[in-house]
Length: 526
Image 1 (cartoon, rainbow, N blue to C red):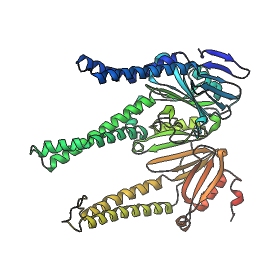
Image 2 (image 1 turned 135 degrees about the vertical axis):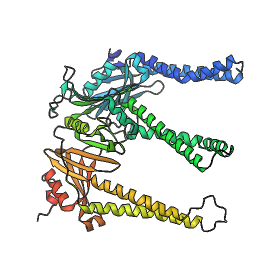
Image 3 (image 1 turned 45 degrees about the vertical axis):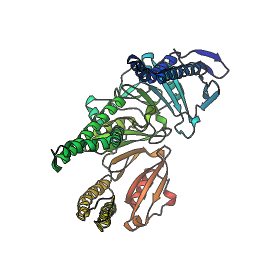
Image 4 (image 1 turned 90 degrees about the vertical axis):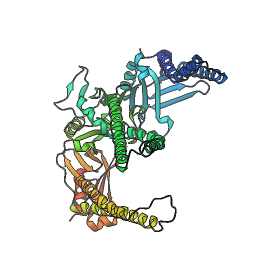
């Protein structure tokens, strides 16, 4: 079923949302109102149902009735249609709205199936231009049938002829309809989710927020338990604090793992016959994101710490019309970026996925950058370590100048500055060495590669024909060291990819060879 037909015009065939939309939204309303109803019933059973309880019950009923009425009217007055040139949506009860998108501007058609719509076979369709600079850049239909959503996806993203460069021998047509499976999820890879950057950030943020709310209670409990009962000294307190920290660390890892599993369950990356790459995933909330291959400019392989220590990496698309870096799939914010092509998988598998998505993307070993780049990073590391030491030394001087004076800041002994120096110097030095090892660039066939980063190491493999310009930046210190930062400008949301601190002559030669003629008018040959 593709929706309830309303009427015809010369250009647009209008449809209503699926009637089951009303029931799906009523479930959400009931779920929101249910806790209030339970509290009211419990109080009534205990005989404590006073006037305020009756008022709360009345307000709850009125609110639910208003929401249900709004849902029914929203369904009746929402129509959508697709013509050869535009997609249009008419909606609104008191204030009518008519929104439209030119099909030439449409870049993404994403399908999402929230948990409460799955029993009804419904999905939410989000059609966007990839810009999100104004409300008119995106249209959302909540909800249509899954079949209708898939039809809209194919129709709006359909290209008459798309040649994406073929595939590899490892690709298989698993559906018999021209759909080619590029990657699926192996259960053992879910283990990477315990330290995946997006889920871990959300999980530990919740723990920190909870700790901030309950921190005073926990501290008072520890003081009453250990000092009040005279059962503890410093060793027990330290042990207890370490136990709490370890428990929070484990709890955060479990939370991150749960979020990762929910986000990437049943993951599939496929090449569709309509010339798109399709990412499908989700356990409770299903999501489907399509990326047109003709807008693909390259791929990016990312390895985040600490997962990189375990040989894990993920694959991202470099394409136009996917929005900002933080734009998430299915409204998940930055948990799963829209341009994600895979979760964290073994590095070798990530490279194979990248090669399937972009045939010929296997660059091989990259050219290292000169030792002057290492010296620059070591200098920054030394400056950072000395800066932290200076701050600790200043605190020791200020807080220890008058030990009799009452101050809210406890006295800092001078030896703390020495500890800060001893700890920060090797850590900063190792980080600088890792940043240097992450630098690299190279050429192979029709692609160029640039690598950089330490905490999040990124290797971008770009199509040569996608490069539309070059930027050359040389600071005062770079000029003294004979270095330059070369940036490849592409027509994609990321804009520019940089090869930082490359030898100036080698970097210019690299840019000239990558895209012959583009930089030639600005070069002086020896």
